Length: 270
Length: 294
Image (cartoon, rainbow over all chains, first blue to last red; front, side, top):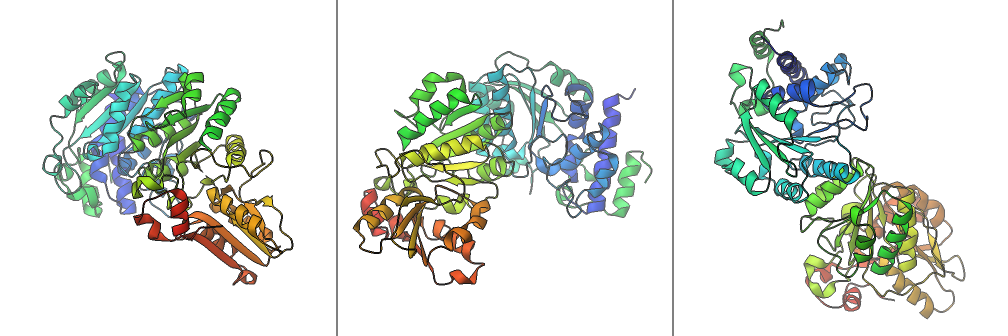
């Protein structure tokens, strides 16, 4: 049986591929990597109202790896925050759908693009909610490579110190960054131990397993008084065989032939 | 100025429940009145300015007007991208407060010389720079910043500065506040920040015709268009600032007046020579070394 969120993930992948192909834009591998997380978040976890993107009780979602924006634009279109044909403007002159995620798009909380900004901002939101007694949660999706940034460690130390159990940090652990693997760039492992040492509750799972993602994200916080960290083990380029684990597709858009092949793998007519 | 700042902030916070103060592990014997009066709106973010600024932006996005507080270059240069992207770009009500503006911490060395901050901040659209010239201007600019919440930078000196106004002035962005009246419409000295004291002393020591002395404690990219009209009354416009000439207030004024060729040759800029960057000493000694004097 195919879950509704799995259908949503397929749509996110298809739309993301079409967007980067049309715009000749980069970062498709990063968007495919998080498609399942986005589908579970928007399809089963987050509370929101597309007719009122600023609804005060909404859960806040922040994409800190702003270069993977096509995934979010696609899911926002699927959830009716923006019309589907708005995706056609991605990457065009004067489009609000910038090539790094933009707060000018309805449903987007925060613009990123420089790594290490999303988590401190999300921590500020979570702190504001705590101080005001609000019950909504803040979800921040980071890459693994961006944990090279010291600001993230400042932020997670702060979140733990202030007992921000309304904060959920997702790490897209695909082990590929700009030039090579995370392991060969700046070793992060043992990552779970690091977060535990910082005072967080940690859950490691397969970032493409919708049942595991739904269960973990829906039930956070797993321990009162502690931030929740999901280390989602993922495959960069997931869903398109020739893009999987390829640094090349951090940069290169698919050409016509590659798009057709990718859509065929996703059983989408080209 | 520090004392006027915290006193005014407490007063404003009593009326405005959205005001919060986030410090970067600094402010001993300054911030306590706020922390004790409003513990739920006070936070020490620790020695982590990037996170402090990002957290402030996040809180501001949820309705707080956050004042971040640190010294010299720590809340600006150390976290310049958070100021640029998180605060200014998103037009969030965060006021970045730096004490020790200019060479107030001159003996502490280059790390503590805040003489390039205008250059950094004024290149950001949406930012308002608040550089008061005395403790009464501190209160005036804070009342404006709270009434018009947005991205802003408040540059303070230390403590014990003289006052030059009779009462709290009404400060508006780009508007020249008259501090001393000149004799004719010859020269206007326009200052920002602590350089006001040098302009007033020059006025005191001048013989006829005395220059006019104005302070502009609020300015920024959006306020340039207000300068030609105010400047047109005077033969010479002389700016003074305790900041390097590159990227500073005088350079900003030159840009603001550049479009009108009537001003060619009528603008004089007095700012610090970069020799101060590699020298330590008292604020008075360094200002004089840098070329800023009555």
